Length: 155
Length: 155
Length: 155
Length: 155
Image 1 (cartoon, each protein chain N blue to C red):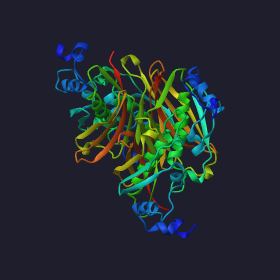
Image 2: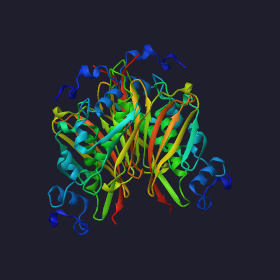
Image 3: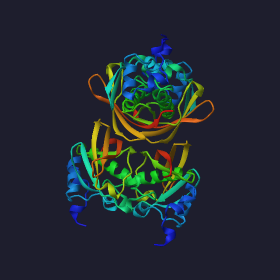
């Protein structure tokens, strides 16, 4: 593992949240292991609005023949979290306090590529509220979420 | 793949929800692919209350150094869903309408084996409300969820 | 109480949800007692999107000096519920299964007239998902909600 | 209005949250105006668990013939909020970030006296998670809620 793949306090110290995400998705900083495990991809966005994609496969299924709610929650949580992350100033951190996911339609391999589009509804000094819509390949809304995050000074 | 690994209308028709779950976790019916993908294990319970476990690993991590909210949501959603599933009569199906997950403490590999304990708070004819607590190996509450499910007649 | 103030099966039978709401807010059908009790007013909208207003007063306060969360929840629940109601066909009923309210900013008498703007995000055959934003008189977002409703055939 | 009915910084400064609530419900400190408006009564509890009651009347009704979700939310929010309040040390304040209410059964005047029983599920340094169950006079569960609160140092 090379030095550029290992973020540390010094490599992140000068970057704001949007710059951190950009460095991550361009491969200059390491990404999220969970993304490789379940197949999160297609990250992108701007300050205050981030999206992520996933192609549903049989390995994502619950025993009743559709994509497990946890995979859908992972997409929604990622879109909400990255949207908030992208608003952080250098020296700020965040944690997610909750995720309220609504499952609107069964998702299967026939749904095609899923895209979760997150955005920040409100950004206070100590908290932020984000939402995310999850669309299937035909752009039907299949799930929705809101998430409250808490903002901290780092260290 | 053998016949006993392939559930179909006939093999499930006579079983109620608890019997279906038992057949699944004893290997007589196929389980959930998602369980293999992310490492859900240690399923068990009774009618109206089910638990599931997972040992957190680095592959479950988000980029900020802890287990991704989607993995925690998957545990909570599974415990809630199986708890409701275990109350179904033969010929009934369910779907989850939502999951409200609360993240109370960061979860890392140091948290040790996680256990999500679900239970049904209310079971009506058409809906059910379930909750789940997620504990770490020291039995500290690290996350909580509620989930509303809709109940249907099959077919 | 006159006959026009007393709705019954026959007076509602031919109306769809939007027509029922219109009849109510124009005074041809009786409105909601809760509206008089807490001061809900300024109802209006179109099919799939309804708003409601309230002027905060000291009688709405909790003991810690701001408008009680229940009053804010009442505004959000009304905007979500009316938005779903306005999509009903003649012969359909609905009930709210839940309300997830997020409180973003303290509300006081200085907030001025509040306006909750609801809209339907998804309308299926058996369920609907609505959201509502609550704004203060300076059009700052002070609260947000989502609500899942179940749709039934009447009778 | 006498001096003992007017709380100020000095009268509250020495009291912890439980002592503040006790002073309020014994009439030594003023209570919540909202309680008079909608009929909240029967407050009581201990550190970490508080209850509140309400007798449903027609003035609490929505236009579709049952108690409005906002009244139910007010009961649940009060039980959650007081439960958290009762854990505060002298010099701490709290605000509610959210309320996730689940409506399990229609509530009418025939439901009889309602009782919301709140309790704190988790109390951290900066946040707390509370839940509440709402029971009718026959002790059937009619609604449920969870609420996340943020804790602050006063002033």
